[in-house]
Image (cartoon, rainbow, N blue to C red; front, side, top):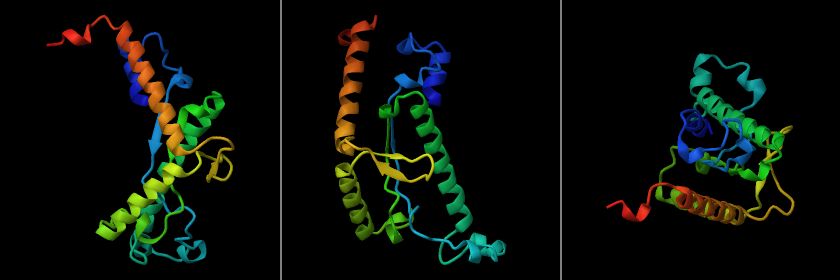
Length: 180
């Protein structure tokens, strides 16, 4: 969204007459890498007693990196979700994320053939799941009633983007066929 806003500020004719604050006209697809948000990875009482080394290495993981990474991703999603909801354009923001991963499937280090095959299956099943949005109170993803599946939403976005491209090509002063 920041890059599009910058293009608009820079006067890119591809975005005329869109204004920098016309976020309601943006289509945003955000595909996550999965997380273990619902897996209770760390216990607050135990973490309160950790020293520096405990925060750096604990049970084969790096808690400080996990916490910062998850918090950063959560804040971006909460911000974008809140923005699109405030603009009554929440259907223009599609976040596909599985926050129920556990064990090696939630690790970015598990590049074994077995784990990669599991992740492919998780990706395929995500396409069949209902479109979800983050609940701004709980931070958890909740299915949208009558929202269809992620696959349906991706097809809808693809159709909208294809139509937008066709309209832009019709308006373009450059003849695409004569580019040779």
